[in-house]
Image (spheres, rainbow, N blue to C red):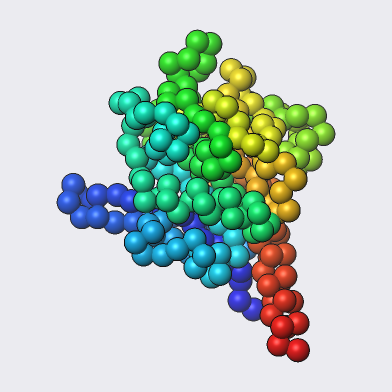
Length: 259
């Protein structure tokens, strides 16, 4: 049997300072294939090459990945500064309307790090350019040195709302996560429910209130060791279940239309 398709949103890069490429982390594909049980499909997120409508037609769900480029602050009414870092305007042009379309239709998505921030901005929210510069906040950035195991190591607790969506999914109100981000949610967007926080108050887990489909998004990187991590695995399994349900609904509608 064919597996449902998850579009993995890629980022634009310049390899060796001269070769333009679209890329996505192997661990994202591994998590989608091995834990969610879906077929990963890397998406070149650029409106020159594809449209949101095409993506909605050909994919059953979407993984909004992390990445070094940030959402451009013009999308939440602020001017760009050096603190905002690098941008990927082409990705913004695809993902922000894609999130809104999925929220409306119920097509499932899972947001990770930048993807988490994209969901908030798509719904009208804003971001802090640099969390570590805020009074009382910790440095959430990736350690500059060390192995991948050291960079993705568990670093802080995330506390969920009692009896909330994430606590029910994880089976615990407190979990340990990694942290590899510089920016963070400032003002939540319309219908964005902040369901989990780091100890310093930084939002870490959100979903869209009253959305008809799966909209869970996290600020940490659950794709790291997703098959074995007790926090990552249930998140990707639940996402896979949502994508299969959407794909089955498509098949049912197709059968009814042809009858």
